[in-house]
Length: 367
Image 1 (cartoon, rainbow, N blue to C red):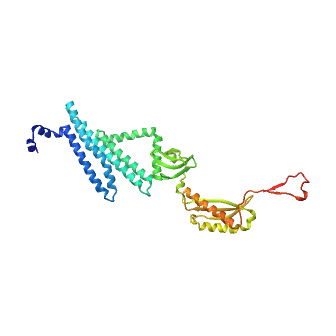
Image 2: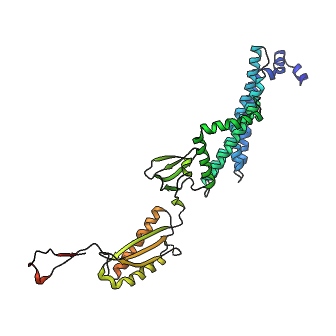
Image 3: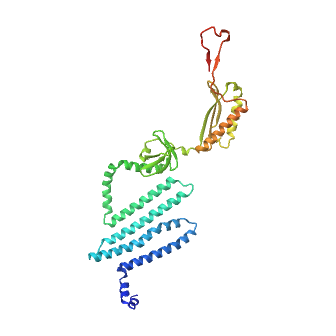
């Protein structure tokens, strides 16, 4: 290589001999390295797109910007060192530390991008528990950030053993000062582990005025969207002290109706009850394996009461009301088929025709 340089013109030979200390040549080399990386990346992108394995696409995508940044920043750090050393006339020892921090930062950046890409990809798949995926992604990000921070501290010459020792004492002080923050953090961890609800569930609490759909479970608070579209921000520590109902995990929805028919249709009660029960047992949207009751339930002031107690197969709120409407209409049709009718509140006035108008007594009202 040196023999080849000696045959070149003197200015060019001098420039090439000092290429590793020349800022201009370092910048040009960085440009060519970046162009090479872009070409290699485009070729790799074509190759991974032809495979059915998606993780290679996610890995390659996470490398794109950080590697480009490293290609430009690493030579820029070297060039900065040369410029400052020429200006100050002394060797700068902290530049090696800066380059180490750059490498650590690029590694953590690539890891964060990879975790985000995997999280987004998994959440786009069907039948994935969004809460679990987000919890694993958050813990993974926190782990690599802590590892990166500890490595940077060690690069600055800090003793990790001393730092951990100080953390034992400092942790007590911080814990006392930020007990609410820590209680919310551990409350969020308990939600992830116990999983009383997940993102997308409809929850409510009889202890508090909390009801709505869970939108996000964070480290400090949970966001719940009420049915009138108002957001509620609930600290995670609250959920360790209240009862939470999760209607989204119901297996069935209940239909519980008391239907009154007229007293004069009493002779038809038995056959009406039998037909309603048969209809429910054969209804495609009624779960006949659950409790199913259709019985004459008592004498009301204006009607004979029939109890209809059954469960639908669906738990969807809108679909439930559609099924309930269909059941009630069929019950009404069965009552009509037997010449009976739904009772309505009535009053009967009883007059004694033999003594009508002979006393000041008011007519008796018989309900």
